[in-house]
Length: 353
Image (cartoon, rainbow, N blue to C red):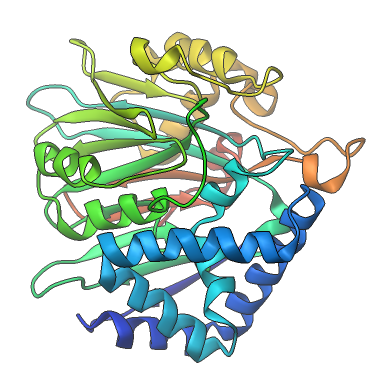
């Protein structure tokens, strides 16, 4: 995965989308094409994908019209039909409707002790064939406010931090209530970054979105407030950090009510990865981002359960790998990142955006 960077200073969403689509038109077109092919492999014909994308995009337009405008302007500038970019932005919602849905694996660890700066690290695991390119975007959603985020071309947001000292990590979830046509969960993450200064404000924003796919947004603030917002069609649950300051999340619901409807794949390693994080968390506080990533792996190194490698014996659409290791600095509005697995961090280091 090649990471590209972009800084936009305009507060106008249409102008921002135009800048993105003009600068990275080739990447926008390529990622949109790859997702269309992926949905076909998973059993969704193009006309159904378009219908699902249009429905989610209209839900987005009603909930956050500026994000719909940004997406449309990006598509126009890149020279593709608007629904194809909207489909990437709503790819989690479309996957929820697939006969053979994608799995998705991610592991997040946040340490937010009282009186100290939060320390975070996450792996983002996905199909490398869908993400030959990705984006680090520094933007200005409103005067005096900066957002820095990592995302896929076509998606409004994913993992990021803002100048108010609030950060968001992202883990996919699966619930029996998942359907189609709701506000894209990637847009919920983006709007929280654009607008929220506090954890309470993040919860309020998330509570207003009618979603159709499930996701955990782990929100952390510079004053060491932290909680995972578990979104699903069945409702929103707020899972706070423990009394010890730790908040760990993988790919199953932690809220007991929503957990009753959890439909995560039977072969997921989500429980094993959460147990791993609990086992290694004591070694992570106080370390540099690169050393924190190494401690995230524990003694297993490259063989740790949080370091995913594609299985070459499986078909391409079933191959997963750890594409990104990322930490958020809420005090300095910065992202520390490595396009690779955390065991590579001591040798490669983490870059800062």
